[in-house]
Length: 359
Image (cartoon, rainbow, N blue to C red):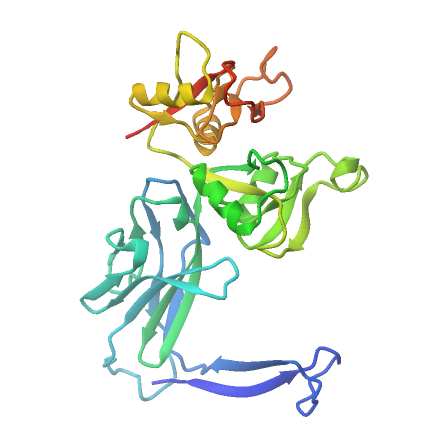
């Protein structure tokens, strides 16, 4: 069997353009491991990402194979080791891994929120692919497939992407009032999760333009600009995602970009005989067998179901909004959008209500 060889413990001095192993000014150390070229394990990931949606299933492909090696010890000899398959989810900063699934022979185990939802495909003896059922928003992210046999170890990564919509959000208190922890909670309260940079980038490519900076999943603060202008980085700049960099998660306060996906249920405008205060709106939905809808549910219905309604209505956070997919006179004439009417006094009887009934 082959093994990993410890090459060297190198001291990297960033002040110089060369390595200096004896410098007392060196601040960074790196242990470099190089795999022996006699390794007989290989791994194949058929695609860089899989796209699905909340509530659906997704199969993450991963296969391993044995390479021909010039090793007399392994030539023509059946391996005495069992193959261990391990799947983990990478966090946004890649410094931590979350256990998802592990298999060794006929024994297997899933972990945490993945329990009862992850299954090994086993299409053939070299198939390490898994299927995750009943996807949640939190399942989005990068996953690592690791194959271990004896001292051999090979890995591959794949992105589980979800179709959905990114939307900017700030609370009744106003703009720039959320630290990172509060921003995460704000998205969760609106049936969403805090968006990743990849999700914001895809939304920007799809036309999202927003001039207020918001938190992202990795702790950075950024905002997407498609129409450069003076208050948003300058009129003569190019379109792109403007970045404030990584900020103090507890002290600094900004808005947040949230992400949500398909839902299983019914989003609708409640036809009622009169306009409602906020508390009346909440009770009206309950009497109709539903709950007052959340901001994320309106964005999902607008983006993914082409929901269009030119009636301003209360939502669960106390805001008033309405979704327009067909711009027309008095209904968002210039663009398809979820129109925002602010956070009015909850005692005002001026609006209808949007409700949501889950399946």
